Amino acid sequence: MNFQNKHVLIGISGSIAAYKVPILVRIFLQGGADVRVVATKNALQFVTPTTIKTLTNYDVYYEMFDNVHFSGTEHISITDWADIFVIAPATANIIGKMAHGIADDTVSTSFLAFNKQVFIAPAMNVKMWNNPILQRNIDILKNLGVIFIQPESGDLACGYQGTGRMAEPLDIAKYIDDYFNSQQILSGKKIIVTAGPTHEPIDPVRFVGNKSSGKMGFAIAEALANLGAEVILISGPTCLTISHSNVKLINVTTTQDMLDKCIEYYDDVDGVIMNAAVADFRPVNFSKEKIKKSEHLTIELVKNTDILSQLAKMKKHQWLIGFALETDNELSNALEKLKSKNLDAIILNSAKDENIGMGSDYNQITIIKSDGSIIPSDVDTKKSLAHFIIEKLVVDLCNK
Ligand code: CTP
Image (cartoon, rainbow, N blue to C red; front, top):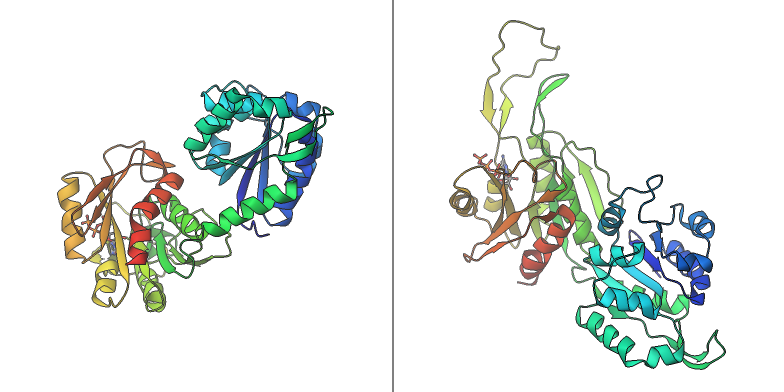
């Protein structure tokens, strides 16, 4: 089983089957996943935080207000981190809480904050399993997209026989492995993503640049890679790293470096997502010596090549997506860029709200396609917006 690059969040609730969770954790770890665990206090009657921490290298999050190990917003950050949430074992109680939006422990609270795929492996007595209230709660969750991994029939810990025994850890892991394989909808596709700023040197220690952090481009690269695409991530200087077997990270500094690398890989790719905040100008002269302080300094700048326009001129089969950062006349300016750069779509970032966008973990975007359709997003994390862009735009372009 291959769980390389996957962030798996496991939620344990208070059933005797919790004693099997360390085995499930081991299987995910052996497959290459990074695993974190949230647990109800009752779950810790059956499995210890020390066992889990020894395996995962992370503390178990079970106290809502544990200010020593976790911040009060851990249920948000842990759910941003995770790709999937596996609640195993899930008692009738936690299923009931999740079906009705009750959030009074770390598992149900994390569930409410989680907006990606959830798997539930129930475990309980057969009479509880057959109870129509429980079955109705399961239907509510299934209708919301939660995937249930059916409990098995057999001897139950309470001495009864019947359905209610949690699926074996290996079967749970196989089920999730199959799920990940079915998600590889961009397998066989190769995509260039550019990210971050470009820097244009003035002298050995100074440069012309901008505030781009690279977070959006890296999030797009990771999301594409998780769906099976091969990604060439060409990034200007950032503080970010990425380690994903589907991502080849190429670090560049100047606009010319970025252009050269885009051209080098262009023939081979299906498309380009040009997220980099490319420096529009570079100094005419580079001073080999550090420029000494003076009352005034004038630096003459000259326009850089427009990478997207250059790629559009060389276009064969490739699709091109640009980004537009605007402070005023946002839609009309973005539309103008879409046409003048001969793009398939442009994604508008507004620079009006200082709390989102450049440098922040959050953003709001509007996708504008060349057929005139306009798709705005909500304000969301850059990781979620990466999925939004792929779902609303990239998948279609790849299948054209
Ligand atoms: N872009 C590019 N090469 C450049 C400048 C920008 O490929 N030399 C790309 C950006 O990566 C982005 C799109 O063009 O995908 C639009 O960038 P933006 O900075 O919004 O617009 P500019 O074309 O630079 O125009 P202006 O700065 O005047 O708004």
